[in-house]
Structure formats: C-alpha cells, structure tokens
Length: 406
Ligand code: UDP
Image (cartoon, rainbow, N blue to C red; front, side, top):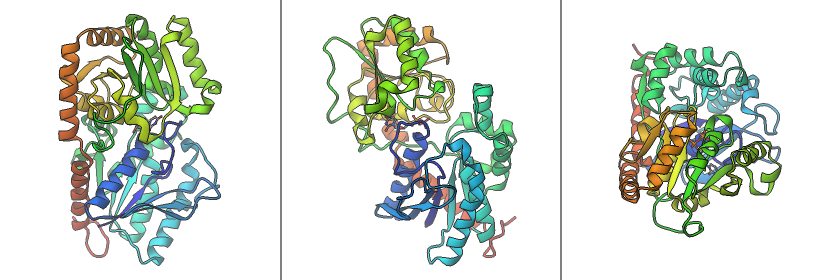
C-alpha cells in the first residue's frame, strides 16, 4: 500500500536524546522501514525546521521523508506548533490532489499530526489511522501547571479518537486512558511498538567499564517526568555501583546544560556525585554499546506512554528495573524479565536495584527471559504486519466516494 505517515515534530532524520526527539522519531523510522521491507511504499511528512532542509530525502528503499513547509523554517518547540497545522494539512491536500503519488492510508503520529491528517483525509477521502504516542490528559495529571501543551489539546484528542477510522493504542494502559477520555473501545486496536533486533542484540561491542563496579544505566530525554532524580536518590542504597545517564544535550554541551547541572547538584547533595555520570546524547547506532555494558537498565518514569528504552535493553539481554506505569506494565514482565516498583519512590527503586545486583542467578535468569520476550513479541516485523492489517481493514470499509461505510 501507499502509506502517508504524518509526524509533524518528530522526524525520523532527527538526532535523538534532545528535549523533543525520542521514541516517536524512532517509532516512525522503524515502522516505516519495516513496512517498506514488507513491500509497502511509505512517505513520512514532517515539518520543515531549517532553511536548508531539502524537500524530500530518501531514507532507504521504499521510504521517503518529505519536509512540509508549515510555519517558519526553524526549530520550534512542539507545544508551539498548533497554529501551523492548518498550513500543514492544506499543503498535504494540494500535494495529494496534484501529485501522481496519492496515499491509500494516512497514519498520523501525535495529536497535532492527527489534526492535519483528519483535515487532509476528509478532503481527499483517504482513511486515517491515529497513534497518539502521548496523551494530554495523562500529561496534565502528572505535570499540572508545568504542562505547556495548548489548552485545547485534550478536547482535540478526544474528538480525534471519535473521528479517525482507527486508533492504534500502544499499551493496555493507553486503552484505559482513552476509554476514560470517551474514545469508544471498538475503535481501538492495541499494537505495541517494537525493537530492532538487528541493532539491539547481546552480541557486539560494549563500552568498557571499571572492573568490580556494577553499571546501572538509564536512558532518555532529560525531562523531569523520566524520574532521573529518583534514580539519583536511590543510588546511596547501591554503594558499589555506578549510574550512567545517557541522553540530553550533545556530548560537547553537557556541562552547560541546566538539567544536567540540576541533576549533578542533586547527586552532590545525596553524596553520590562520584558514581553518577551524565554523558549527554549518544547517537542511535552507539546505543547498543551502552546497553550491553550494563548490569541493569533502570527506567523510573512518573508516567510513560510506551517506553522504548526498556525494550531496547531487553533485546540486548539486560534486565530492567522500572516503575509500574504505562507501557512498562506490558513490556516488563514483573519478576521474570525485571522488577517493577511504584513511581516516585527512590527507596523502592534502591531496594530493587540492590537486591537484583546482589543476586547474579536471578539477574541471569531475567536477562535470558528479557531477550526471549523482546524477540518473540516485539519485533518490528510483527508490529508492521499488525499495523498493515489495520491499514487494509480501514481501506476496505471505505466506499469509492471516500465516505466511511456504515
Ligand atoms: N535515544 C538515543 N540517544 C540518546 C537518548 C535516547 O538514541 O542519547 C533513543 C533511545 O534509544 C530510544 C528513544 O531515544 O529509542 C527514546 O524513546 P523512549 O520511548 O524511551 O522515550 P521518549 O523519548 O519517547 O519519551
């Protein structure tokens, strides 16, 4: 099928680890690649955020990234992008009406892409599938006044859920959240994100480490809700281990970064500054080296729509100590591939880390089970197959006129 991915702020070409570039970028890149491998023809539409960005870039065979001129050609925080979504959808409509490449299905990622997608889909009669990646209701619940999302986000997300042809939820927790928002469950299909088992595997180089010092790894954008402060507060309970934090600014800008400074000050305050290393963003291709070097991955978010990093660690044969939130409650099998603890609870986190690091037999058992689980249930091939089946289903219920049947 000809598939139009819309990912307004998260380009598959972006460097990951910064404030607005993480799991969604990876998801769109990997899903597009797996769909192309299965013979589909994919175009990813993302906002042009630089004056020199070429109109189109071929990512690989079967996947083209198209830079849509919507808003000024410079980086803009995602919470400021809503005003440009009308231009985004107008451009898509003009393109699909005038071009010889017309998609058979639109797959929108994040709510703003959904708005552009549904507007363009309605005018062209193309069915629209929605993946939210994150929900405004959840963000507001956890962040309160610190949430900088547009006020209308939650209302738009609810309306989108009722307007699109199908919602793809990434976890059981997301289904519950969507139902609470008023999105009918019958419109949803649960399909988890995946992990690339060629990139992420136990075999291959690993970053060296100091003998006798267990390594706890944590990875992600340096935003408050990822819970790095809780990890640092847990470190006094694991006195021999070092904690490596991957993510945030590019390596050369780490020392000046306000989030890094805040976390380093905290590490100093709790007496673990010599055992906590914030190393900044690591290029995607080097991520496996870091996972392989770790005894355990800790993922301590306050909330997490899906969470790719636990899966990436599992695919490298690394057990996970995580918080029992969002997608982690599906991906991490508690007591089999890792341990789940309550969020915002450094003591529980510290206890779980201490016990696991002290128990080599359990760690090896978790590692083997984690690898097995990641490979068996979370391959991109499997995810792409399931998503392609949704594309086929939504296309088949459309009449030729483009009106939704029934
Ligand atoms: N990542 C990376 N380099 C970094 C930090 C993160 O390549 O320095 C990648 C990581 O491997 C994962 C993604 O960014 O693929 C983060 O996704 P996740 O779902 O864990 O979190 P999100 O960013 O969506 O909140």
